[in-house]
Length: 223
Image (cartoon, rainbow, N blue to C red; front, side, top):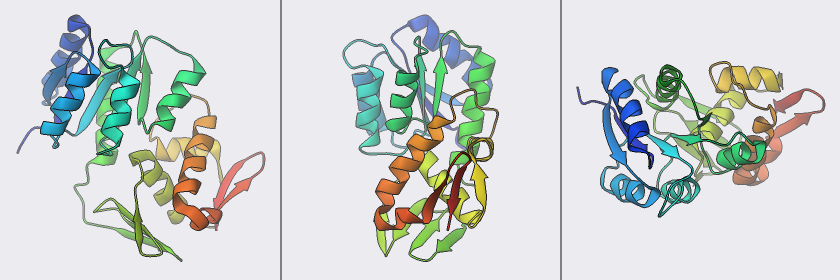
């Protein structure tokens, strides 16, 4: 069985080696890049990369620019690493379709756990499952969403959020419940992360986005 490929991008050689060592011990095949431009070039050639770990502050091309470029061609899971802990930076990362956001310094064991959690959500080993609700069709096996027969592009997190809404249609869902279920572990961020994802999901669904109703003071309901 081929090893799962992970691209680690950081301008600090010691940081790349630290992450590489821990992930390699877990059996992953790790490729390294020292800046965003190099990362994009490598990703273009190695499209079977399963996950990208991307530092923010780098020369030549920073992490935000690299994330935007990768997102133009792929919905591969992306974990952002940054020395900043400001809310604006975290929300920007999620707006760009980042799946996780980890602030330096961090425990390599925690990073490894996050990597495994993201990969569990993104790598589909089981049989295909199709969810349908009126004008929306979600093919979980093929990772495709159709609205009125037209395919739309969603990030990994948007896809999981929509699937969760359809599975729990008609139920009022609190933000805490959505975080627990969709993010799949204790998330140490602001619940407004959900509002950002819902806003983008509604926009991408078009008229079908009206199915997502706001439950004031609580969360959301899909009906």
